[in-house]
Length: 187
Image (cartoon, rainbow, N blue to C red; front, side, top):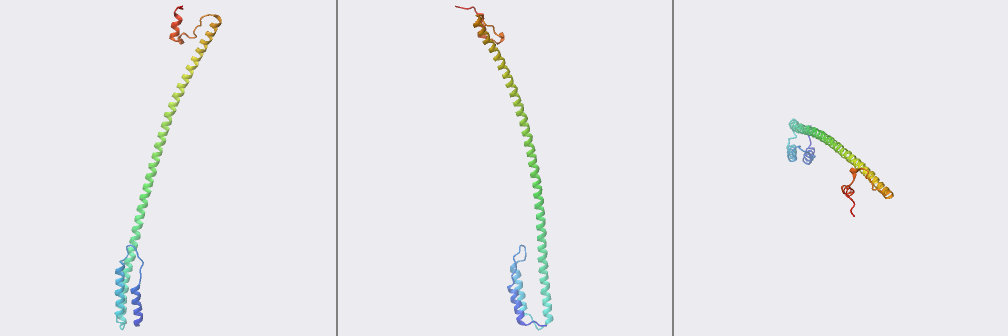
């Protein structure tokens, strides 16, 4: 079964105008187009009179095309496998980083909580000391107020009776007042 020259010419033109999608790490586009152009030239020049020669040539072209496709499939598989390995490595690294970040954050939070509790205890101690000091001062002021009240009451009684007032507590008298009380009246 001999091919007519018009169908051969149509196939040759089809081979010359074929287009391929761009692919990363694929075959060189110019090399593929050059190969197809040589194939088209061959088809145009093949002796169509000998069908066995055409079959042999087509079988040879088929083998070469099959090799090209096999290599392309292998390259695609290798690219896919490498991409999967890279993705797995990145995912593992990201998980490890996330785990470390979480551990660091938990440690920081625990440290900050401990420091806050320690500060709180220190503040509670200071507050307790201040409350105790305040209570002491209030008690002292209360005693002083009582003593002053007695002195005032005694002075009021002296004014009424004409006697010299007695201090409620001799230890509480002002030193100047005590000296004046011991000196004889000058006049």
